[in-house]
Every structure is written in C-alpha cells, then in structure tokens.
Image (cartoon, rainbow over all chains, first blue to last red; front, side):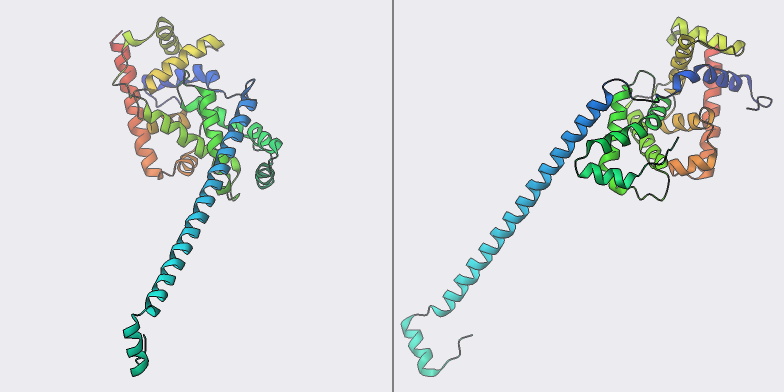
Length: 101
Length: 192
C-alpha cells in the first residue's frame, strides 16, 4: 500500500488494521459440533416447512370442497324454488302456457 | 477456494433426504461465510450462530441460485447482507475516547503508532478490539466498506458487484469514512 501521500492518522489506521489481521482470518473447517447442530436445525426446519405445506394443501382442499358443496346446495335450492309453485299458480301457468323463465 | 461443487445435484439430493448433500455444501461454504462474518462483525458477536443463520438462509433460498455466477459470490452477498442487518440492530457509538480503551487497547494504539512489528495472537486480538471500537462509531455499511477496501483489498468494481452500490457512491462514502477515521484517531491522540 502506498503510504507516501497518507496522513499520520491514515498510516496509524492501516498499521492497526495490519496488526489485527490474524484475528480476521476465518476458520477453514467448522468447529466441533457445528456440523451436527446445523444439520439438525436444517432437518427440523425442513420438517416444519413440509408440515406447513401439508397443512396449507389440506386447508386449500377443504375450502374448495366447502365451496363446491355450498355452490351445489344453493343451485339446488334455486332450482327447487323455481319449480315449487303454488298449485293455483301452477294451474294458471299450465292453462295459459306461460313460459317459466 | 471455490472448488467445483455440483449445487444442483446437492440440492436435488438434499430434497430427496440425502443428508450427505447438505453436509457437503456446509463444508464447502463454511470457510467463505466464516471469513465474512469474522471480518464484518465485531469479535465478540456470536459467530457460530450467525454462520448457522446464514446457512439456514442459503438452504431455504437455494432454489433462487441460478448458477450463472460462482456460488461463492451469491453466498458472499447473502452473508454480507446478514452481517449488515445484525450491525444495524446494534447501537452506533457517538465517539471513542482514550478513557474508553482498556490498557491493552491503549498499548495497541501506541504500538501501532510506533511502527509495525509482527504481533502475536494476543496482541492481534487487542488490536482487533480497538479496531472494533473505532468501527463501532461508523454506520454498518461504512464499516463494511472500509473493511472490504482496506482489509480484503477488493476493487471498487468488486464492491459495486457485491453491494449493488454505484462506483461514485462508493468513492464518496470511502472519502467520508476515511475523514471520519482520521478525526477519530486525532481525537484519541488529543484525549490521552
């Protein structure tokens, strides 16, 4: 590093950083127990994610089923209502051939 | 450093429940993450927890890795972002005075002033504690920036790539951080 144009404070900063360099070096291998605990955490998170996914799908399917059932029920009621006339009205319709729509 | 590793294969095997695939990835990525965490976070921060947190993020986002750049780049960016998030949660010191330094840190300050002799591990740690103290007065991104340049020797282009900042923004910030550090060291000298 070029120190010619640096102020004494800059030089001091760099000298201090240089002295502390060994403490910045990362570990080449994980410390004892790190791998096991990380794998355990990973497995737990994956299990949780899978479970949430499963719950999500179940919830989706059951809401779809409810939607279909409610839809079918209301269509059924509507059709029944349309055909379920009072006998007097029914005879009037038959006599005058009023189209039901 | 970035030994060839078949990420797609590892991911596929991990999804199928092959634990050895995850193990392979962790062993491959650990040195890269460890270096970044040790550089960008203060010495006493819970290093293993942070590394584990970064690894969890990597595994949950592994499907986002496209493979168009070396995996170490993608991992470095994720690790750096996590470190910055951690730093943001910490309080920024208003300033460092001579009375804030431990006797060992004061010695490290004076010895550094005299010139560079090769330090032993303990001296390096005291110097590091002092560096951490000085850096704790900077904003998280300024702190990381100065370390990327002065410690890791990254070029401005490399920093732009890993942080997403523009070159002019980096230059401007660097200028400001250097002035801040200079002032801090001057103040320390004067408050002796």
